[in-house]
Image 1: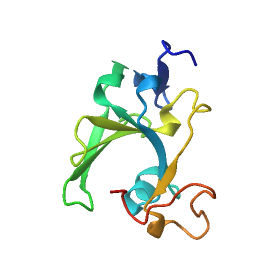
Image 2 (image 1 turned 60 degrees about the horizontal axis):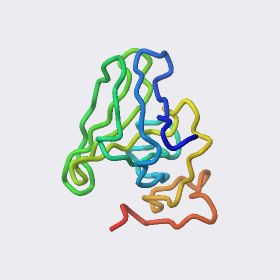
Image 3 (image 1 turned 90 degrees about the vertical axis):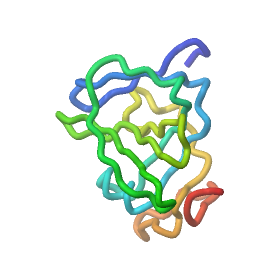
Image 4 (image 1 turned 180 degrees about the horizontal axis):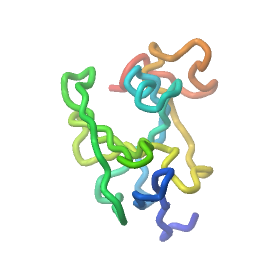
Amino acid sequence: MSNDEKAGCGCLCGAIRFEVDPTAVVSTNHCHCSDCQKSTGSAFATVVIIPEAAFGLQSGEARSYPVMGSSGQSVTRSFCPDCGSPLWSEVEVLPGFRFVKAGAFDDASWLEPTSSYWGDSAQPWAPPAEGLPVHAHNPT
């Protein structure tokens, strides 16, 4: 992916399309918290942290669902109201950033996870990836 190329993203049915600037990626991580497990229907979520300014909604309108995070502040998860695809999250404790779900990328092959969060909540049948640092909860 070239430096001036945007990364295309969207939901399963195509109703929501957005793009991100791949040069603005802060980090890519696996999250094993129980909320990510519930919202993805899997053992963990892979999230790409980007500044809001690097995010551009092109079409569609996501629905959102807020929950209380372990910090006592909200985590708002956005998804497609038609197909249910999880797309991104916004966390009150880290304003100005979006946590884009790796599965929303048209091509996620260039992503490189650097750590796992909430390793204490990882399912025994899907442990954190070997070779990556594991944080027991959110990193500090």
